[in-house]
Length: 510
Ligand code: MSP
Image 1: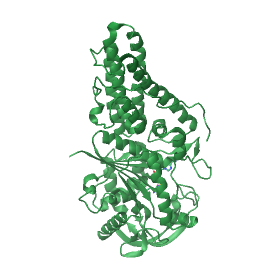
Image 2: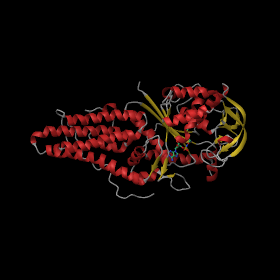
Image 3: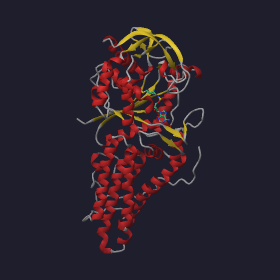
Image 4: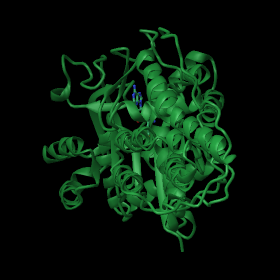
């Protein structure tokens, strides 16, 4: 039986159209999925949309639509973007689907029956945009501590989840599993938050109707975060444990942005504990993108539209840039100048030139036919070692979700390739008939290293890597074995590469 790998993105609210922040999480999940698939894992990659709740209801009212009409319209925007961004998800869940609604009702009822959800009364400060209640002491000038917008005092009958009961159990779990919440700084924040004390959580609302009713009391709508978080298991068929749920749960990693960590690292695990289900293996919170130094916002009109970026720069350049520019756990700044710079220096210059030079030489000197490598000299062995070390480094980095470091390791091998050409000077070897075998060996090492580079890059830049691998005479079906030195078969015909990434001369402003 093959090893499984289950990865998720947050499900996106349909009251907003997709922007670069959404694309970022989904892209990261795609890269990990593709990489694990390459290694032979049975990968399940889930994304989707969060369609219930007051926020969506309000947006629909404003747009003069029903919430479902709004959702049907916006969900297409997400799906079209994922296609354009080359996202290889296995399942797409919408919280308005029957499979989800049934799973959520079941989960709620199960926790209620065992006594961890009870009916009570609520009076607190509510922030509608964040769908979050705050105590008075948490407010800053009576404004929401997260978004700084005004809050209102609400009193309502509500169902409560006994989150306080799970405080110690959750702390013990976090402490016993250092990798559970990543990166470390975020883990520390959560530990501090839990230590301050968990209050029981209001898990139903009576102030609006767009959502899943509480089983047995449909005056109450299940709190949108209880509803949304459950998507990670309802998509697997929960409560039916026999199919995908049995196969893929617990999830290997929930990828999320830092703003929704508390929901994933405190609420969700305690819901699962109450339901007697295993906890996620890892929750990783990435940083946020600003744009040209400013917060991205509709009012500033600086929201970066991924479709526009892809049209202008190409999908793989965008994929590369987003994961290379900023370490995954940290905040980063998007600028067109930085993107153009990466395209010109890393992609056109380093990656593209190396492939052009190598495939041109094998065509010039051997009609494109890969020669059998003879005795390897120290300089060849060094290049081989560098390439194999890269494969190990990428494995370590991607296990830690250090995408940028993984790409850095790949680019070190690419630079080493360019240097290897300069040092072995194939054009000089070509002038001496006695050195023909040596020339064949050098070109073998050069091409073989790039075959492995592009095999790894197929996770990051699938379209580009597929082209490069085809020119290198390797078919698209990649497996773990493709990462071993020696896969390039003598006699293979190499095609002279076309430029992978043309240089961009202008530096357009937003
Ligand atoms: N619906 C909830 C998630 C429920 S998951 C059970 C939600 N949706 S969202 O559409 O508002 O946000 C989804 C993701 O986009 C979050 O992980 C958030 O961090 C991410 N981003 C939104 N803006 C972002 C940036 N400017 N930069 C990076 N990521 C950002 O929250």
